[in-house]
Length: 349
Image (cartoon, rainbow, N blue to C red; front, side):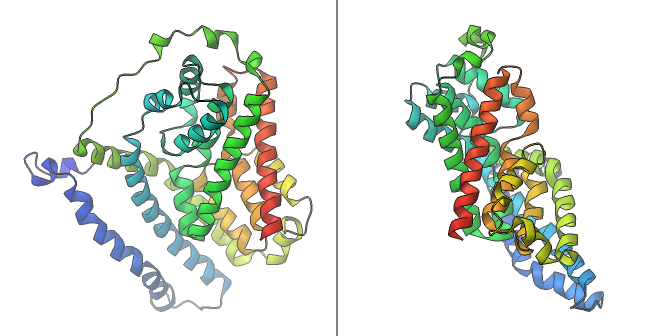
């Protein structure tokens, strides 16, 4: 990413670890002083009234956008390096021969660090099935990979703090493990398209690359370039919507149908979330404002997980390898798991 600005014989090219070592202190200083800089700009430079709704809306937007993008850049870079150790092929090999429940736990955990997008759902599904990995274990991976990704974790940490991020990761893992285990117990292999089991092993084997530290640093910068360039617009749109709601939507309005005392709030949130499609970057800033305006934690988590975890594009793509009964079962079980989490957190918090 930065190589084109540096001479080929530069010390930074030969020892790319120096680039993040130098940039990290700069990032840290900017992050620490971001809020006072924004407050000074809004209140002093712009001379805006502190108690005005439009002032709070603008301040919220100007502060949250760079904060989230900075956090996202840092964590995506780190996760990009970590992911260079976990290729899809290594993940597939790691899950071979594992019994159902142990496999569900491993698959869900590996789903967090393995590169994944909706377009890779079918190749990964084929590779797992071809390797003899149980169907339920495969689904644990397919549920965890899009739901518990670095974008979601970064946004939750940046907007809500580490406790909420930890809750999200823990409950996401529970849903992936639980849903995969149930699908495995139901023995639904008959609803996989027959041609899937006819794939030959040799067609799916990928050659593993040997990477040194410079290659892994490059992988981090590549992850930043590819991921941040795709989601920044969703972050801005999501925060813009959130900023408007933050300044103008009355708290009583959200509490009236998304509060913890409304018995139907969790099923309604899941019902609304399942057919929607957004990524974590677009939905989490909106969820932040839902919580501020009176929506309960359980209901908000259920809505967010339904939108992110039951990705409409992934479901459509999987139709090429799954029959409708298995797709509906998959959506139903995951939605049920999400509702259990929502009710539980509404009860506890």
